[in-house]
Structure formats: structure tokens, C-alpha cells
Image (cartoon, rainbow, N blue to C red; front, side, top):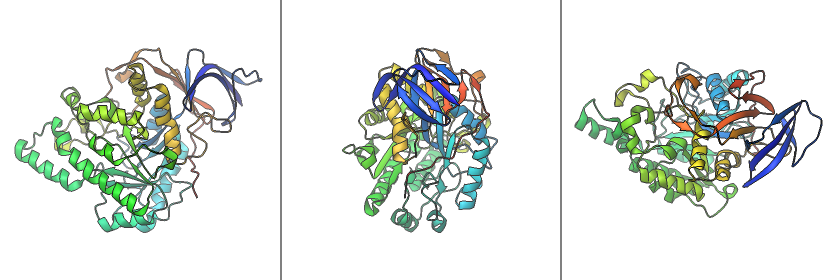
Length: 444
């Protein structure tokens, strides 16, 4: 099968160019200004921008065990509609992916059901270091450590365990950093003041800047001590930015970090309107934090943009503060949100592509993805930067059927998504005849 994408504007490796792209089977075979080869299918991309497929390194698709919230099929479908062609999913499912057998079970599910390319994280616990160290670096995204409890019960709080993992792991370690003791103390203070009626707006005070910095600085210190390859998830505070450097390129960094869509979009005053719909861990914090995160992204202190897509049912989210889980769905709207910031001239389109496609591929050493290059997988997303639309329940694809972006007008839209050369999504319609592939990694 030969597919030719003609007349599009390619955004890739810090350049914007008018180029045609020839796809043969799963791979890009030619990139030139005017390709005239005989092909089976032509996609006319006139007026559209062609980006490398988005790689989301942090999602929670809830399968197995929590499929009333989401599942691999439903959320990968929403991801593809949002231009995400590859995802890496977290281990805090039920049961948690803390053994090789349970981890491979998730890969088996994805092979049958995922519309996007996929990988999964091996979960660390206080007592599974032997399993963690068996993981094959070529076939698994990374080791995930919850240095602060979130959804699920996977908190690693034993200092000796942390030391052992950081010392002995040959793989990238990715961490959720919030200090549990600080959060517990802040929660008790809030209960003393408000009883069971803690306002959602107190969330950034309970899961505070102090809690984030105390934990993330510990992770960075451990990584420096053992020269561990460390990736810090979802930075949410200005203070934490001092832990990270921009004096070398990402391929030379031993310590990298990311920011999530919600921390770039929302800020503390939005709790008044959005309430629990923007309750995440770490919390959405001050406007000054949000602005500092965007600046750090542009200045390359922050390396990657991710979603931390983590759906719950609306019934679960409508509970009181102490009974309301943190997290929300984002994969369908992440690229749209960043394109809106491009429209507002807050960030360049080239930088968005760098942080959502190129850098995740470099950071995790992904094989033949994340760039528009000959002999790379044809993971591509086409966007119309002049197509206004509104997010509403009728166009949501998440299984949970709600979004923190409901009512938001976006001025750009994903029109096509190709996964391994297969046109999986086009103007609201899906072709599910081919599934995504397991992501492989260029690691020893």
C-alpha cells in the first residue's frame, strides 16, 4: 500500500516546509517537494499542517480492573482523534503492574484493542525490586515510582528501597513526586478547619509547593548520587524548576522533566468554576506557577509535554473533597490546547512539536518514532489551524463522557491521524481495521 500526502506544510525538527510525504506500508519512504510516484491513495493536505504523531509518555487508561472509568480501546481511540499516535501507560491499575506477568498481560490487551502504539511502565513497590530489575529495557517504557500516593496504593516510601532502585536500575526511572508526610499534615489541618467540607480550592495548599519540592529534590539528589537516568513527571511549581538545567541538549541529560497540559492551561482561580474537574495530583497551583512553567518549557528547562490523562466517572468526581479522586481526561484535547497557545502567540508551533513528539522519543529512546524522517514509522497528524469548534458532550470520545474543556472554543482541529502508515482517523471517522504496535526502545 502506497499513500502520498501532498501539498501539506510539514513541521519537523525546528523547520516549517512545503513537502510531500510518500508512505509505503508502515514507513515513510520519501520526503520531497514534489513527489510524482504512482500510489494507491492520495491525501490532499492543502491548507493543513503535518506534524509527527504525538507521543504521550504519561496516561492512565485504567485497564485492567478499573474499566468502569476507561479502557485501552476507548482511550486510545480518543487519543488518536487528538493526534496522539503513541502512549505509555502507568502501572496503577487493578491489580497493579508490579510483576512481569501482570505487565505482559497489559501488553496482550493492547495488542488486541489499542488503536495507537503502546508501551507500559513497570511499577515499583516497597517489596518488588527483584521483579523491577528483570525488566527488559528494549521492550518496556520505564520503571515508575510513586514517591507520593495518588490513585491506587503504590506509594514507595521506604528509603532503602528507593536507594536500591536508583542504585541498581539500568533503565530510566520515572517518578511522581509529592511528599506524603507533608500532604497528610496539611490534610489534617484542613479537616480541623473545615471538617468534611474542605473546599476544592484548598487542594493546592494541601498538595502544596513544599510537598512537591521536598519529594522532587530527593529524587534528583538520588539520581545525582547514583548517576541514574531520571525523568520527573508533571512538574507543577516554579520552585521545582531550580532543580533542572538547560545547559545541554536533551540527549545529553541524565535528569529530565515534563509539564502536563492542565498545569499549562489552568490556575488556582479556575477552581471557582471548574471545581473537582481540575483536581489533579499534583495540584493546579498559582498563575505565577503556570506562567513560569510555560517559560521554562520554552527555555528548555522542561523537556516534555504530557497529559497525565486519568479519567474517573463524573459520579466519582462529584463527591466531597476527601472522597473525590484526582485526575481527568485529556488525550483528545491536549494537542488542541497547545495549538491554542500557539494561536495566542505564547509558544511556537515548532516548540510544541519538539516537546510533544521529538523530545519524548529522545527521552525514552524510542525506535523510529517522533520525527518525520525517511525509514521512520509513518505516525503523522494533520491539523487545520483555522477551524473553530467547541468541546461538548456530543463530540467527546472518553468513556467517562466529560472533559474539563467542555465549553471551550478551539481554533485548530485534528483532521487526520496516521498510525504506522494506516489512516486511523479522518474528519471524525475511524478505520479500526488495524491496531497499533508495541513501541520498541533503542537501549542496550
